[in-house]
Image 1 (cartoon, one colour):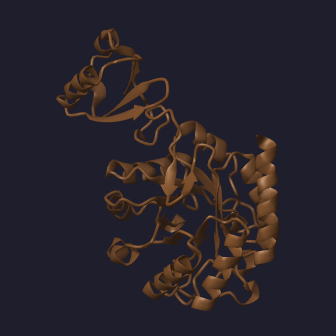
Image 2 (cartoon, rainbow, N blue to C red):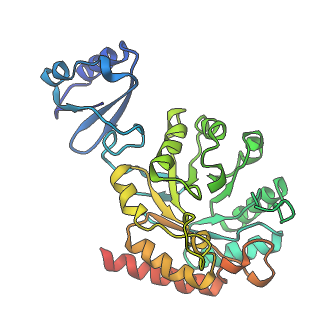
Image 3 (cartoon, rainbow, N blue to C red):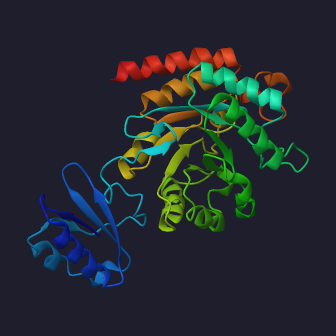
Length: 333
């Protein structure tokens, strides 16, 4: 249930109403916007007399919410959420370019790529240290050593870093990581999601290979219900009947998610297509669809990459793409 308060309600009266709701064992999420304050009631709201609430002189309107996701629901939080990472902002018109290799391979490689993508306008460096691979014989990443190399690149360039976490047991290794990524295969690892809800770091949550938008939002709800509201959603393609691309990029998910949730939504065209030459057009389409950012794989030597070289752009290709993305966003203003 959501309760919209009238303008000018005193804090004392607002607190009094909140305490009344809490006395019914309800959680109360307060969202303060430019024109209104919205109270989101979480729990068994069947015990709340809707007509009684609507009759209160400080209440503008009240209605029940049928969707199972609450904290990430735009009805509970009408204003866009802005996730801040250092000086970088994502959401509410703030666009972030995230770039870097699929996996960290060496200090020279990650620093070379970090310098290149920063020069082209990237604001955040991506790189995999722990890699969930379909085959147990494929390169699994450098683990903790990979995080150390990412931190070296961060020190060299000043770029915040994002890398994937696969197990809550590894959390101590991520203390200096700026954004923790939950990959597609772990989108419904609920124990991991609940643990990430207890930390004060942004979480980049990728949509699973065959998951619906509601399932993605329910996974975000797991994180937020545990206390961490700094969640960024990522559309990275879903499994369909297509046999020419790695996945099918669901660009309709971007405006649909913006309707459903206040959380930022970014797009990963690299994993969606699996083919480097398709990354630029899909990136431009994502920007035109209203995405709050892009996460793109860039490698200085894709032919010899240990992971996903076929979908990785060269630094010069990323530079050209970044300029085009800027042009598209300018045209949309």
